[in-house]
Image 1 (cartoon, rainbow, N blue to C red):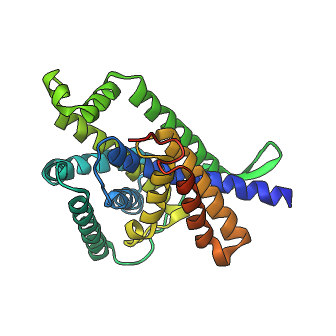
Image 2: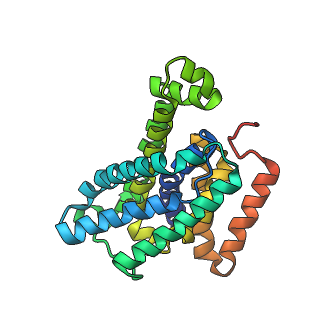
Length: 288
């Protein structure tokens, strides 16, 4: 029984890391840029379809598709941000919500037209299949890979925001864009690059999550609520909060699906409500 519990716990952590990879960009855009981007899941879906297309039609190895998915989604998001999103930065949250929800439905319709409604398959390389013994516990190699990638991304984002010149520009542009512009900071360029990195990470998460989350045109709508739960429970703009919330959500979701499948969704939402009543600004979020 203990071995089963530990296995489910580890699978939940791997699932949480996947949610973190996709959600961290949404946390940054909502928390630091103040933009409500409910089309974030569409960028993750785009990354997944980039990976499956490269593997199925060009024979590209799975690991090679990951940086390509990140790069292509990041580039596409810059185009979307410059052409569309920057016009909404000074608009209210309702305008941003309506526009990005509409963009999500457009992406779902477009993907359905190009690829059809069926599930997209993925074949992992042999060295990522199977299980390995970790401290006496048999764990999936691919899930171990997900945990490692999630931790590396979390460390890179924290260092990038807190310890680099670009991170200082982001904080300055968010806190006082007029002052930042006066100091010679290209606020629009900083926002575009920040948005691209966040969307690229969503694309990376979408490519990594094909086997676990599945990939259909309904992906942005199916998982949007989970991404929002991670962001709100973790605290807007908090990398550590998003990581902690994603792990909590992943573990609870995996535990309830295994032990209490009939009421799994209810428990997730109940825990979210309880946490937000206790910490309205999120686990590691700061008060406005």
